[in-house]
Amino acid sequence: MSHLQPDNSNELIIQRWRNGIKLVRLTKSKRQIYSEYSVMDYLQLPKPLLVYFYNRENVFQNVNEALAETNGFESAQNAVGKTMYHVAKKESADELIANNLEVIKYEKIKIIEESLERKDDISFVGLSIKSPWYNDDNEVIGVFGCSLMLDSQPISEALCHIAKLGLLDAKGFATKNTLPGFQINGCYLSQREKECLYFCVRGKTASETAKALGLSKRTIETYLANIKIKLDIPSKSDLIEKTREYFL
Image (cartoon, rainbow, N blue to C red):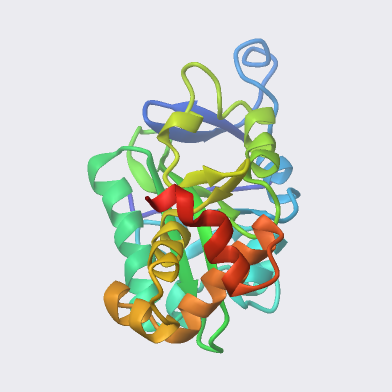
């Protein structure tokens, strides 16, 4: 396995390769074979899409500004060379890194809901599409990922960004049928949001739900607040009344 620093120059083209991606330098002979979406094209994508490259040691090699802002880094440049342990609580960072290591070990794409709990107690939930990153020798040198922030914006709008870059087609990384969670009144709820709503409908408090799911009370409250925003429901009582039928 090569230990050279992976090349992720902004002008390189991102191409699907095996079960992941490879960065290639576009030449005239390859122009008819490869698409022309570069690293820079991805890095310029705005929220809610977070874009990032990790090496095998889970050190950020390149990220977009949306990732830096969401994760709590000062800037995209400031994030490069750092790990999630710089900004996230240990338990949260451990979980995110474990997912990366699984992608590297099995050389398979992983579609998973991930929660981020920052050291400043700000929390987010995202749907991550993580894939192996190959070098010219076809060795896995890291992970390329896109994470969609599951807030008030419909997930379909966020997925559209990826689809336009060729990652969602008949032979692509993912289809809607592979996405976790479920929909209520046309709004996507993550698996964690679904679990929180399940306990809420059954009259459990945030503290009781937190104990059942092994999360903090603050995290549960954040999930429930996001659900009310997505469904445009102002109160907890209305939320229970309007979603009870989904859990009968």
